[in-house]
Image (cartoon, rainbow, N blue to C red; front, side, top):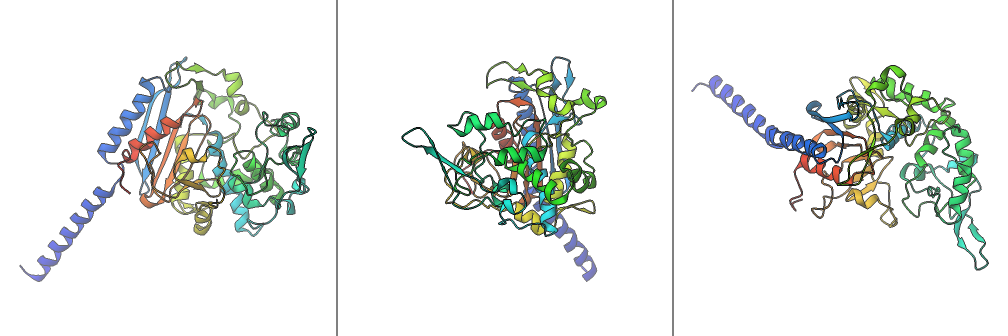
Length: 419
């Protein structure tokens, strides 16, 4: 064998081995795709959902798509790739990205007091219970709310109209009334006592709507215009929006409710679709967008590619890393339902996976993954280790934890006790 032949054969062998290694480490192979197909079909066959869809990219390429069942069961409209769904809290990461574009411009620091830019949140009080005479105990906060607090849900804002004392005040103030502007929302929310001292607990609520208000305040531009100009339009996310024009409403999925094992009941369109079929003064940061699988995958792909996609840079890599880093101290032990997401902390508008699952009951996922979901059971995640992004769409209340677990098990394989 001459030297040239040896080199050619060696390169061929190296290439073959490299290809085999890549195949071995690929997450979505034929087995995984079949597993996902079966899982999606089971959601519809068992009546857990009327229709579901999923889109997965790995190493920058589409590796899986399927849509099963019906977007509108009563009209016989199939779930499709271009079906429009309400993504609810999956709006939050988009808002966070918009806010962090201003961070990159030097408009604020994370530990700046919120009141420095929004005096609506100066002079806050904290409700600490009732005294023996039945009067509320309102204390001065141990410290001011910071911008970091509103990005990780540790501000202390009220979010439960059934809560003692603060609940009725929240119900009366109606900060989230869709007839409010973001400024009116902030004024009303800022007039209410906090339900704990800033930084003491993780408590889901209107923090990301405050982020939208802050974007508006810092930029001098309406939030919906700012997020369109700085995030959605540059990425070509034309289908991600609050208001769905009449010509596109035939693609909007119906929304259903039903506990596991119950028959699904359609929530009346005039009730559940109203926010997106009329234009309202309120442009919330925490919910409100509709989207398609491909639109939201574009957003996820921008994130896994460290803030840039197709030559368009939305954020710098270090900013994406900052958002995907846990900002929640282990001292914060009161975390509402966050532990149901698995071994996670919380970054800037994302849950961040810190450790592998510790039991078969926990959601599987890769350490370093960041993700969020929506009230109608939608889900997405970004897995930087495998350069994998997944978007799962369904329109089902109440929130379907089991559906998310089953979908994750289908993608990665069920928990096997190995780290």
